[in-house]
Length: 126
Length: 441
Image 1 (cartoon, each protein chain N blue to C red):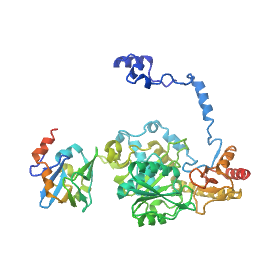
Image 2 (cartoon, chains in turn green, brown; image 1 turned 45 degrees about the horizontal axis):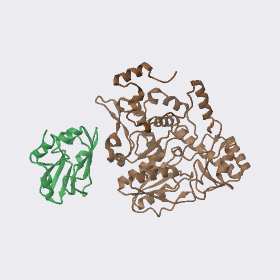
Image 3 (cartoon, rainbow over the protein chains, first blue to last red; image 1 turned 180 degrees about the vertical axis):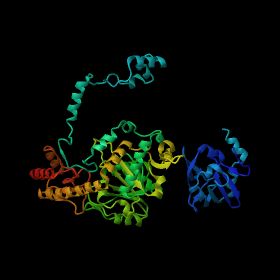
Image 4 (cartoon, rainbow over the protein chains, first blue to last red; image 1 turned 60 degrees about the vertical axis):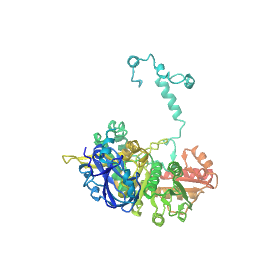
C-alpha cells in the first residue's frame, strides 16, 4: 500500500498536500483499491465553502457511492475537471493526477488534527 | 394438482436435519399467549368446490364485461393489442420480476432500454428511468428530487393535480421535512401562480389536469422561472399523441401513469410510473437506468447503472427509497408503444378527442352542463342538476359506470361528475349513456 510520507491523512481516507495557504485533497491508495473501478466523481462547485469533516464530493464506483469529506475547512479554489472524462485516474494515480479538490484554508490550526503517514498506516490495521 | 412442493417425507427429512421434532417446535420461542390458537375459518374445500366459491365471490364485483366504462380519473379503459399479453406472458419475462444479476439478463435489459427511449421520446425529454411503481409515487419522487437539487424545502402543487397523487406527495414530503403548498385552481385550470414564492423547489401541474383540462404550460414555465423553481409536469402518455409534449415547454421533470399504455385496469394495480428528466439531473433521479454499451469485443451489450445510488446500497444518502423498477409493466408499455407506433398513438389520441367531444355534446343535451370552459382532451367535468353519487348509482344499476363523483375530493362539487371517454367507446354506447342520464336527471 502506497502511503507517501510527505502527506497528511484523515481517518476517512483522504490525503492532504499542504502548499502555503491552500491544500490539495484526494483519496488514498487504500481507499481507491477498496472502492474498485471508479466510474464517476461528483465534484463541488468552485467558490463553495466546505467544513472539516463534512461531505464535499462523492465518488461512484461499480460497487458503491462514497462521500469524500473535507479534511479542512475553507473555500473550494479548484476542482480536477479531468476526472469528468477520466474518473479512472483516481484509481491509477491517486496521489498526483487523481487529485480531487484544492481548498483555501480558513484556519491552518486544523492541520494539527490530521494524521501523519505512520499514524494513518496504523489505522489501516484495524 | 395441488401446488404443495414438499411431501411428508421431505418435511420429516428437513426436521431431522435441523434436529427438531415437529413444525410446531419451530415456534417455541414465541410465548404461548402471543400465538393464535385455532383460526375461525371454514373447513378446506376441494379444488372444484373452491373454484365455484371464488367464482361466486368474483361475480359480486363490477367488471367491464358487463358494464360500459366512462370512469377514468387516472386509470383508463383502453384497447390493448393481443401482442402485449402474448409477450409479457412468456416465462422468460413473466417470472423474472427484477434482474438481480442484471447483466446476465440481456434480453430484459434491452426491453428496459427500449422502454426508457420511448418514454423519453413521448415526453420529449433527454432521458427516462427504468420505471417507478405508479404515477403518484413518480410525482412525489420528482418533488423530492427538486428539493434536493435546489436545496429548498417547499414544493407547490396545483389543486387540479390528481387528489390521490397529492396525498402521496404529502406523505413523502412529510417524512422528508418538505412543506407542500397548494396552488388554487380557478374554473378547472391553474392560472394564478402568485403564491409561488422564491423558496419553491418545484411547481407541479398536470397535463391534461385531473379535470381533463389542458393546462397552459407556457404560463407554468414562466411562473416557475420567476421564482427559480423547477417545473414538474404530470402528463398523460395517451395525450402525447396529439398535444405538444412537456419537454417542448422546458419542463424539468415529466412523470406520468403508464397504465394507459397496454396495462389492464386492475383492481388496485399493477400500475406503471413514468419518470423523465433533463440530462443534467441524471445522477439525482430515483431508481436506475439501463445503458447501452459495447463489450471488449465491440459487441452491443446492456448494463444497469445508478444502482449504487439506491437505498439498499446507499442507505440514508440514497436518491430515493425505490430499489427496483416495474419491469413487467414497463415491458407491457414497450410492446404497446412498439405495436401502436407513432401513427397509432396519434390515431388513438384523435379518436379519444372525437369521442370526448361527441359525448360532451350528447350529455349536455341530456340535461347536464359542462362545468369548466377550458379545452379538454379525453375527460371532462359535468355539472348535474342533482347529487352526482345518486346519479352514479342509478346508472350503475343500468350497466353504466358513469364517472367519478367529485364531492369526495373538492368542496362544493357534490353535483359534479368526472367523465372519461377513451378511444374504445362507441357512438351507440355514448348515445345509450345520454339517454339513460336524461331519464335519471
